[in-house]
Length: 365
Image (tube, rainbow, N blue to C red; front, side, top):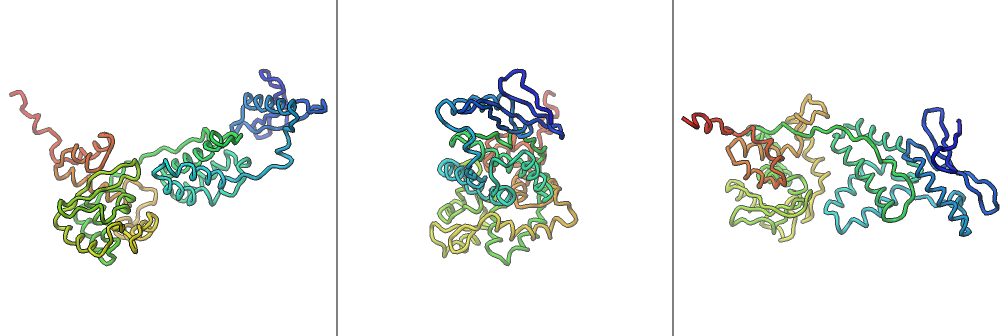
């Protein structure tokens, strides 16, 4: 290891390591006038010369006021990533509508690998290892990017709001390329096969029927309560858990009789897709319905084949696709899907039976 003095910052030294990385050290005079040294961190972990110089100034100020810059190393309290996560979710509880969902994401993907580690010991290599682990488990690129973004947000929250003084090991982490355009939707015959397959379990059956008739996302269907259903005008108040707010969905007369009978014994605040009035968690519904979808539609398909595999979200895609096939105006589809941006809806325009070509023919004859 060769130590060289920084050409730009006084008291900062660059230590060139055998693996090509660089670690930064600083020197200053302690309370007795002796030269003291401290290693600030590696370049691969986000440390820079400027950051090291700022730490040196902080150490010098501590000495001037009678403090010991190295006291934290002599007796340092361990701060685990789990501690930071707890602060983050507690502080965000009142402002983040998806707080519970994000907490579940942390507990499922991040906590098992890094939750118990001292935050000061977590490096970029650890974050990269987390990413590779998720890839090996077959998680979708979008899911992996969401996990990395969440971890970065948790650490940044403690840096900004609680004075944690560390470089964020997630900073600069390269995200995976995402192509989440699912092209697979169920045909009318496949819809009938699925409905017949789940008919024996009334909770799963009504989940499938509601998903296919409203196009709501998984959590949107799971959050439907009896009070959200209006049998007089065949409508349902749907909660958009992803972006907040509510919108209206509808069901036809063919399903109305079944739905009416199903919800009759329920109390007004009971969840339609639930047990004893309480909502079924999303992961539970995935565990129940996922194997059915795999058996019916995913035989022989690779787990990473997002374009062709049928998953629960395919029910939402099926709803929009059949609306387009049946000639529903694109703005109506946008409203029923609760898309904030029409660009999200335009992907279904190609399925419309008449995209305007007939209207243009002979326009100026």
